[in-house]
Amino acid sequence: MDNLLQFFNRLGLVRVAAMATVAVLMLGFFAFLIMRASTPTMAPLYTGLSLEDSSAIVAELQTQNIPYELRGDGESILVPRDQITQLRMTLATDGLPTRGQVGYEIFDSQSTLGATSFVQNINNVRALEGELARTIASLARIKSARVHLVLPERALFSREKKDPTASIVLAVRGELSAGEIRAIQHLVASAIEGLTPSHVSIIDDSGRLLASGAVTTRALSLPA
Image 1 (tube, rainbow, N blue to C red):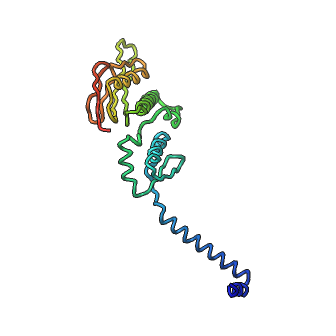
Image 2 (cartoon, one colour; image 1 turned 90 degrees about the vertical axis):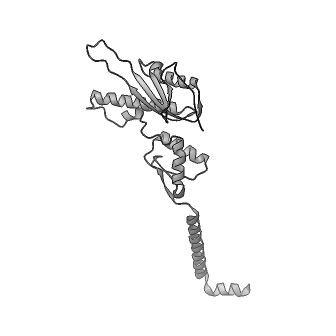
Image 3 (cartoon, rainbow, N blue to C red; image 1 turned 45 degrees about the vertical axis):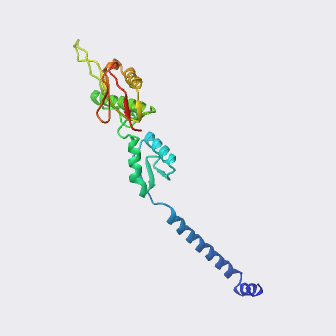
């Protein structure tokens, strides 16, 4: 012990402090390398996500205890690179991301100045379709939904009036009862002026007819 003290005394306080500093820096450097090697390489899972898609995907990642990073106010989600393919397949079975379902925010991103009535009508239909699809997809047994609306315009000086119609494509989990199918028909019909449940048709994503009217309905059973 005395020899060690004599050795430090010969070196001087400045040299001992310098050696201690170098030792701490070396330990920190090696600790950084070890942490960097153990941390998975992150890569984008999806980019350009809507807030709804981002929230749903993050909830799924948290359920599976998968590390993730959010970039660009949630528009991009990064996950471990070696899990991207598997995660995309898993999320696809849940209908995520929805992509293409634009709701009323379409009017926030576009200027109405100079827009023709035709463009305004198209945007209105797209917004209605997107909002209805989101509402239907929020139901417990629905994985994803696509809504297509036909809203005929009455011709000027014409007495003939065509009724609006709607068609819906669903991807479901578990069993969808006839009552639930009718509920979806009434949900869509009540959101569109002049649309009746008898003019709302529903099919599943394999092309099977689930409903062609308020009376003709059938239950759907798909593996969860």
